[in-house]
Length: 167
Image (tube, rainbow, N blue to C red; front, side, top):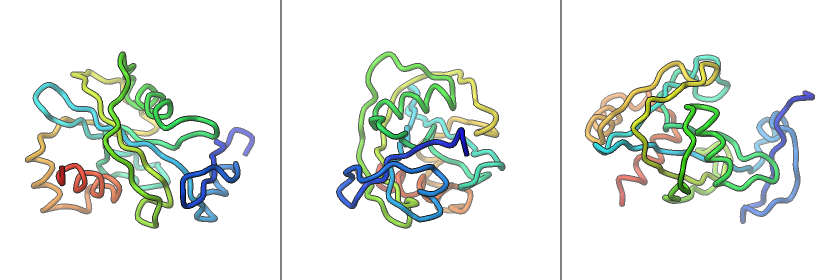
């Protein structure tokens, strides 16, 4: 527990009301913050990661390029840049583009999520504790796979991709 991440607990308006350890936030179902980042290449393909089978949430499912919690006192943008570096070894040179936000609800694990995008051609250095593999996929490939095998993707990825395609 000594090394456990501390998260900001937030109210329904995404205002900080407390700070607690990750395990308490999750077991008590408290609202907190997370980021998801989509990395696109110059062909318009999206880099997807296969979450490690050892992850506590959505193990072995395809997900956004990277994702993670916002640490206590950290901004969404800083968390997104940190997660890119930690998970796929990508150091961004310009600010990430914010696409949209998702409200905290049971489908998001009670996380307020800010979704960002950036562009990169890779290659990436995958964090093997978090990611089993990665691949590029075209929007058509993703759409067809989500239609035929939605269970292979994390619920949050499915939610984000549906919202993205609504634009």
